[in-house]
Image (tube, rainbow, N blue to C red; front, side):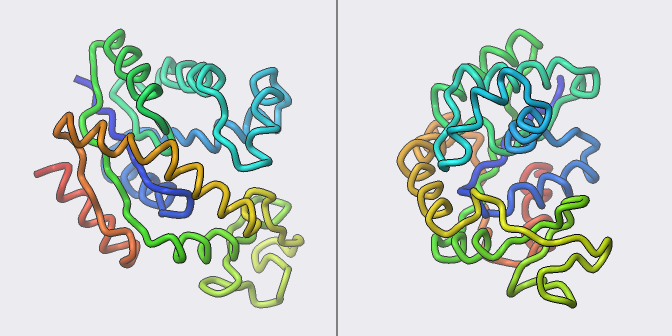
Length: 216
């Protein structure tokens, strides 16, 4: 049976970083709903245009738009053995739709990994993030600053802050998460497949903990 693993956690919890590590260790594609949204925005697709206003104001994109993007991605050939889902589902209703979707593939969610991080740490992580305009190299004003302020070390392009990483939007994103996504933790706990991981530690320690839990 194909392996489908969900990564849960508020914005800034480190889901993307851990998904990349899991992809290398487990040989499964990493599907980020955030990257799917940005790809559709860049390509100015109809779904991207519909999602744009919600993303820029830190609100959840409506289910019908999100689910269509995810279904299209899971139908691609590299997902035949499963996938790591980062940022989807975000609500119990999305989780139920995912269950129905995977049942059509003859599979189901194997584990839901919840990265638990303190709220003040989340705000610091996201509001300090900077990306270069040329290729998207990632920096942090405190934890990983460039050698020259505002300039990418690798390609010399200007660094910028994503609109959804501004403090006010970050705080709104976290509020939306707690209001609408927190029940998802209970959804997977009730199913007996939730693994809660302390996300306040080093990347390496978190990754080791996750892999031990899902292979136990």
